[in-house]
Length: 65
Image 1 (cartoon, helix red, strand yellow):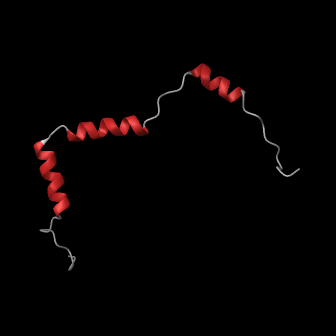
Image 2 (cartoon, rainbow, N blue to C red):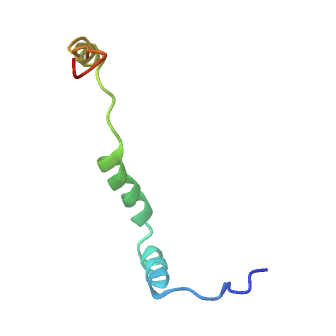
Image 3 (cartoon, one colour):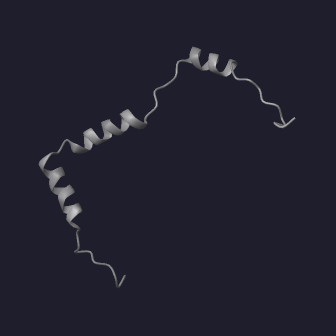
């Protein structure tokens, strides 16, 4: 048992978010869609990936040579 735990305490911000989600149930879906727009990378076409791999220039083993 933790002596410092206050399970009954909920911050004002947590209460605000809970009320907001209760008023607008579509928030979680819109958050997921927005995250997908920003962070999920689309699949690259195989031809484009092959061209990108073929265009790479091989580095020397010792850069300062």
